Length: 137
Image (cartoon, rainbow, N blue to C red):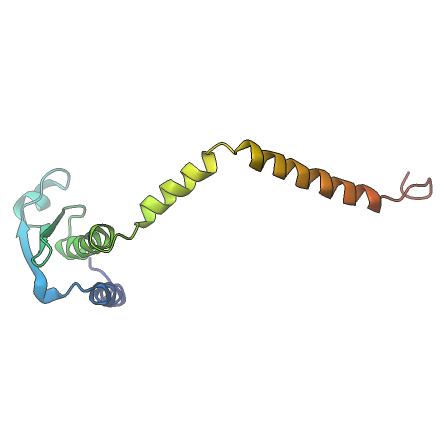
C-alpha cells in the first residue's frame, strides 16, 4: 500500500512553496512500537524526519507501511513548520478557535442590537399581513 503520486507531488509542491526542500531533510527509519503485530516488530516502519536548517523534528509510526509513514511525517513537518516558523495557524487550531467563538456569550450591546433587528424585521413582516376573511380562514 502506498500514497498516490498526485498526493506526493502536491505535498512536495507545498513544502517547496514554504521553503522546505528534500535536500534539507534528514530521514531515518527505526522499528515501530505498539499495535501492528509481527510485521511492525520485524521491519523499520517508523519514520524520523529532521529539518536541518530549523532543527524541527517529527516522528511518525501511525501506519504499518513505511511509505505511508514517510508521507505522513512530511505532512506533519509541514504543519509544524507553518505553525512555528511562519506563525500560521493549523486547521485544527482554527477549528478550535471557531468553536470557542461560537460558544462565547454575547455582550449586552450585541444582544440588544440583535433583538432590535429582530423586532424591526417582525414589524416589517406584520405590515405584509393581509387581514380579511377571504384569505385561508
